[in-house]
Image 1 (cartoon, rainbow, N blue to C red):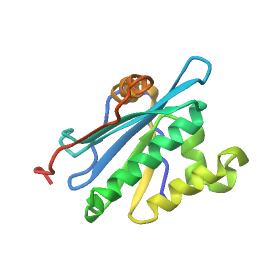
Image 2 (cartoon, one colour):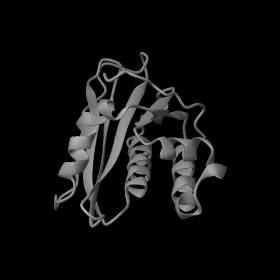
Image 3 (cartoon, rainbow, N blue to C red):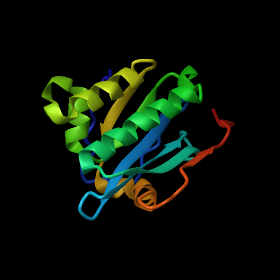
Image 4 (cartoon, rainbow, N blue to C red):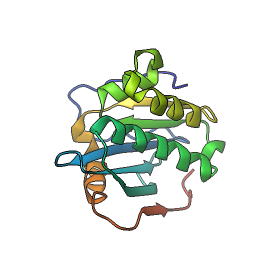
Length: 164
């Protein structure tokens, strides 16, 4: 389970993780009247170099579900690519509700309980925490999520970890 939540007030630039760690910035975006949604994430190292980038269309969902699905996908990719040998993963989201639900699952609305639980189970395989960020820090992934609305093919780009 994530160890802490950090709120970054009045700060709009991306903050790099400490040396030897990675940070996954995630987002989910919904178009129109919830008939199209996309999720995405960008995993970066301490130098800001992109290690993994994903984007995909997920169909009709409300914003909170899209943001939770983006986090779950990021955790799954991190595990599937065997990056868990690194000491710790930081996951960023701009949704206060989602961050609070993952940090305190008992506070989750019933509608989202199964999805929050599945994020926690996916992340139980390694050390990670969730960080609340300002929406301005989410510009890169927000663009990816919006691009994911209508794409027919999922995007997954992986670069080797030379710097770590």
